[in-house]
Length: 268
Image (cartoon, rainbow, N blue to C red):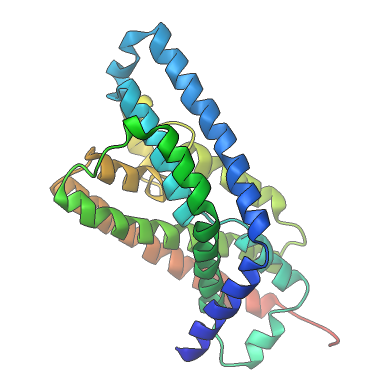
């Protein structure tokens, strides 16, 4: 365990070396959020009954996007899949086949160290962003939501990481996997509730999406905070989210084992 704490420490030092890059990325990430907030304000201004279908008032919709920003900062996978694919392509994983270090846990430690560094750099601009819309900020819907929300956030981060890790394993078979990463990102962006709340979709389509892991990558933890899922439905959702995390972990392990059998490195 000590070696993985060392990996986290090294990861923090490396990530903090690029703190200006994190700050810039955070600032630019708020641009589409401002655009979406402005768009929904316009929709509600010209159509007062717009919230009847989704169940969101104008204030509720704006607060939803504030939560999107928070969840994104805390859980999103940024460049981990690209770095994993580069390690495979360039033969850097050879050392992990010879040393008592599990590559998945090594990358998971780097992922969490990257999140810690990113949150440290993004906290000030994120606080300013939330302050600008402070009149829309609400506390968690209930005491149960207060405790369940951070648990769901951890599961969300793990689910995003394991899916990205499994996708990066395609580098064992393919020289360039950027197309697959972009396709996955597009599905996640639409089906996770990042672009719009899933409540605006037809009920049947929403139910179908909940048969996939994507809503549990963003929409579900936000729904817990807002109280849109509560009671037994919330606990059932947390159990399903945990099952998806476990399934993604098993799939990531499977892809690694199959990939290593395919892997070959020369020289060095």
